[in-house]
Image (cartoon, rainbow, N blue to C red):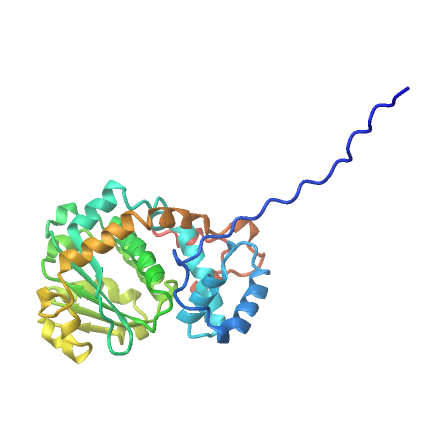
Length: 318
C-alpha cells in the first residue's frame, strides 16, 4: 500500500522588512555624512534606545541635529526631544501639511518666500520674505506660520548642512490691519519652535522697510525672545543699510541686486513645494512622539518650563 506523503514541515515566514523612516533630506545629503560626528551619532543612538517615545530616526536626522547644535550632545538631545514633542502637540501647525490645501495656496498668493541664489561670503544662505498683497483680510496668521514651517522644511532638505542662515523680512505693505490679525498664542509657539526646535544655525535676522509701528510689533514678540536671538535682530529703513551685513549685489533686482526677480524666485520654490515636496511633507507626519511610551521621569518640557505636572497638556496655547 502506498502511503500518503507527509505534509511539508512548516517554516517560519521571514520577517517583513521594516520601512525606513523618512529622511529630513528628500534626495539625501549632497555630501558624505561627516565622519567626525560618527562617535556622537553612536552616542545619540544609545540615548535613543532609552527614549521609546521618540520616533525612529535616520542617521541623517542625527547629523542634522548635531550640526545645528555645533556637535554638542546635550543640546542636541534636548533639541531632538523638543522638536518632535512640539510637532506632535501643536497639530494646528504641524498636521495636514498638504501644500495644495486652499488655505496654503491662499497664503502663497499673499507673500513671496524665497532663497537668494548666492550665499554670503561666509557661506550663509539668505532667506527673503515679503508681502505682495497687502489685503490683511485675507491673512490667517496660524496658516501663515504653518506654511512658513513647511517652506523651511523644504529649504532645509534642499540645502543640507550649511554654515548658517540669514533671514530678511521686508515690511513694505505691512500695516496695522495685519497686526490686528496676529495671534499671541501662535506667536509664542512660533518663537519656541524657531529658537529651541528648528535645526539650523541662525546667523542674523534683518527687518527692512521698517514701519512706524514697529514698537508695537516688538511689544508682541519681545517677551518670547531669548537674549541670543535679540542680538541677531537688526532693523533697517532702506535696504542699502543691509550692506553692512551682506553684499547688496546678491539681492533680487527689485532691491538693486543681480539675484534674479522676486516673482521668479518665489515661483520656483512654490512649484517645488507643490510637486517634489508634497508627499515629503505629508509623510513627515509619521515622525511623532508616542506619549504612552515616554519614560516615567521628568520630561524635557518640565525641565524647560520648570513645571511640576506630569502632563504636557499645560503647553496647549490654543
